[in-house]
Length: 249
Image (tube, rainbow, N blue to C red):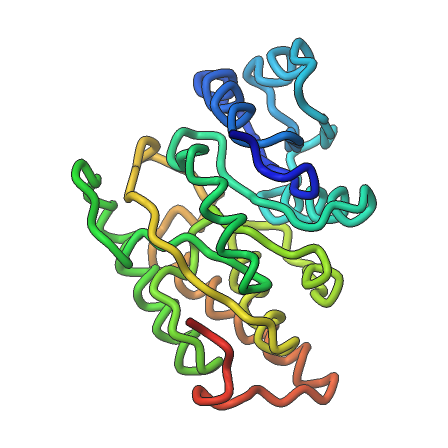
């Protein structure tokens, strides 16, 4: 069963030649429209994608970053008039069969975010300790500053109403873009819900780029991104609602 033609499934991809065909075959079973943003892959992913006729494809000539790839997908969804967009990664860590769940949840929210910590599933992987610690730390700090009740600030499996995306000014090109997104979403008073997804870690050696591979440097960078995002929206005269005022289920 495919999702409504009013929704787009989009995948940012960078050097995923080992996973891309299997993942896209599964996505196509659950989505009637699929976009892949190839963020400058150099490992043969580009050639695999060019052989497919069942996707829309945008290629960045050079690697620009995870946030940049998502922003390209968001703009495509807006320009093409889609009602909404579901984003998921192409490394096998997100299950395409759950796409319809995200669409259904988006009937009652403007952003639906997957959480790997809302529910335990049989076969869940143990997350890398430093990643889990950083996730918990930043998620807690976000909740304290925004009044949200998030349990997983970094999950890339999400659904967005495109009407909501038009209200966001997302400029961060890297892995920290979701943090800017949460600040922008709170400033726009968007309704957010989380739904559970399994905890799957296949790429335990992911590189975040240079010094960011060091946990302390990455945590400091994430805090700097948050501070910059808050400064930007507050300079525009935005005041954040209290925890009681935030629409979060």
